[in-house]
Length: 141
Figure 1 (cartoon, rainbow, N blue to C red):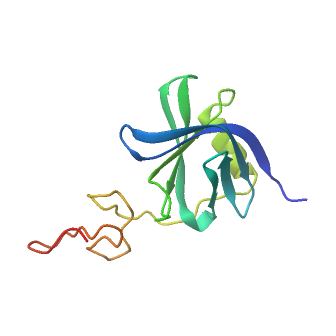
Figure 2: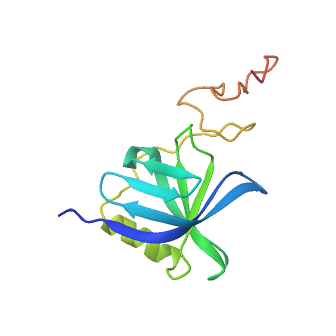
């Protein structure tokens, strides 16, 4: 049987800054093919290794506010996706996910300066909001 890691988590989902939603009673499952976060109301967020650039530990206040940020390239998900477990250090969560076989493989992309969504490789115009680096062009759809 393939390795799989499961643990209860709290999920933080948002665009960044003070605008975010917190979902308690979430679940994290990870194996070599997929990493899933699931919570009531939120539903299921699924990531393949090719969707994830990295899993990054964050610590604001040890134990009270720490966890893992998913740095991803999915344009249909919010930019900020974090999960926490009060009983596991962020580094231990990342280690368990890696031991289950989930290895991020996406390439880092540039993000739109207006909406924060990833820009397609080589693009100078955001496909989500229309913002562009080009001077004199309309910057929003």
